[in-house]
Length: 527
Image 1 (cartoon, rainbow, N blue to C red):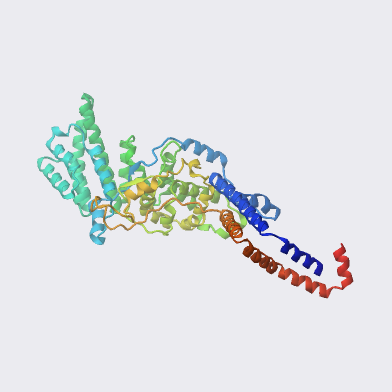
Image 2: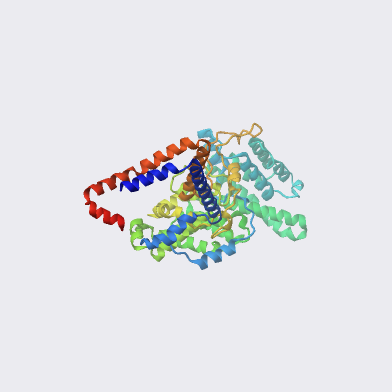
């Protein structure tokens, strides 16, 4: 035993500083190569190579079970191929459930002193109004000419004054619309003005309908009058919904969709879905989803999360994560989980608002699909419907984060939908009153008290083995540098470290040698 110890000590004493330099340098090089390979593999496949090998090959040998839930490849690939279309990544859409500026947004400002709308959002609304409510022949009618200028005004009081001026000339539907949206301080007052707008708008629509084939000018007038009429009827239905007359609102929306089936830009079906959920008429909700949740139609958070809610409703009241982990998921539970994963992949920002992990603000007048603005608009109106279904939020809480393990990395590949747009954060910061610095050139409306932190797409965390190899590479590189600069001192440290490392082993060997007979120990060493 003592001979072995003395030979080890002699071996350590014969090592030169060059050996320690070579040892530490080689270790640094090997760990650096491992780090580069691990980083490349993570960037390409979204997982650690060492971790994947451990789970795939070592875990089964040790008796582990792969708990990943099975997926239906046919459904995934089919929908992925259908949805990978060239779409405008950051197209901004009109919020189908946008609030009334005078009766809701302005009341919030009066109470809190905060501006809920950004200048960018209000400017988009002004462009929408000019597109929907004006045409090239407006100069032929004095009231319409005044309103054409009113929609371009940035000052709210100037717009309201222009609307009153137009009404002094004649009953102008768009003037009533402006007053209902911006001057009315209650929903009841807005509804009264919209009813007056409806009377004027129907007259203009009937006249232009008879003349629409007489030329391009009359055709443009009829298109404008149609947009005005649809807008008025939709806002009247929303007034009924806000005033508690939900069944009346549902009837108005159904009639409107039946009368103008081609005008899908208003997304009236999303208003209808929300009203039907309020009535807890889930069969009709499913019927609407069957029509609009089609792979050939644009998706939205309302479509995806409502579909998930209906499937969660079938199992959520009896769902238990402990029981599911023991027995596995049933077919119905699997369908509900897959629907949640599908919804979360479309818009990953919604769950934090539904689970009240993040505070809500008033939704903007425009939304960016798959962005934080759409998540706020959805959760603002639909949180109550999720709470009404027993266990639905619990099921969402247990399953939503699992979505990100299914999405390929990098995100450009996508999974069930086209890849998540990388520009949503920038667009959402323009739409939402986010916590950011504003330049002096921006208006007071945009530079008001900013109180919302924009949600961003969850980033994949670096695997443990990448961090470990990075630390190991850095540590060995530092040792190599120190050994090269201070070879003798590092040699002393290395000998002291090895002596300390082998001290417990030497102690154990001495104890064993003192207990066992010397003859037996001699025979063992010979073996």
